[in-house]
Image 1: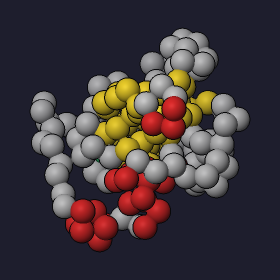
Image 2: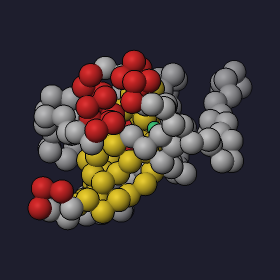
Image 3: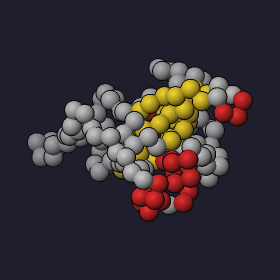
Image 4: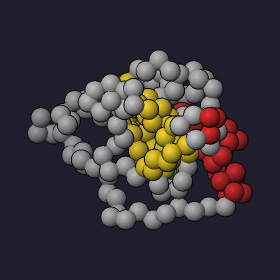
Length: 156
Ligand SMILES: [Zn+2]
């Protein structure tokens, strides 16, 4: 027990992370065509086709464009909708929620506040404690698996 390596509670983040702005061609170079289509042009991946819709790996989900941590696997739940679903964002995650009236529906779009990547939508039919369902495209995320397999010391 005394030999446990120290695991930092939270990554070191500057108080005001800089806004990341890149040109269309820079994003195209950095991202795969599907990542570009979804994250930069507000596309949607097909249900049940993404990398993470059924993933139960413990870890941190980051914005695929700017690597900002935005969700934790603890908040992921099995919504059955075919996209990775979270009932809350990572504490302090810099997300922006925007009213989206496309497709004749009123939905709330979720984007990354750091780089403006389109992530998905948030709905109000999620489980307790928040009642929210962040329905996020796998392709807009990258998973940073927890390094320590014994991570149950985190009681928060
Ligand atoms: Zn981002």
